[in-house]
Image (tube, rainbow, N blue to C red; front, side, top):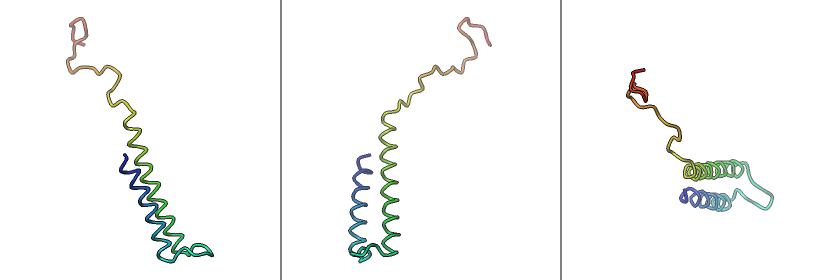
Length: 82
């Protein structure tokens, strides 16, 4: 969970630095390749954030079924077969 959060932040910063380093980000704005790269980096960032959210929620959900599960023995409490 924590790895997904930190990893998504690292990918976001590395992606922005890579876009700026490639020259796709100028004073006038983004080039077409820069826009595509920003969209791809954003998609990966959001995907990793959703994975971290799912992992966090999985810790909060009780994995044990709260209802009574019927046994494989086909007898009721009186001992008669059903």
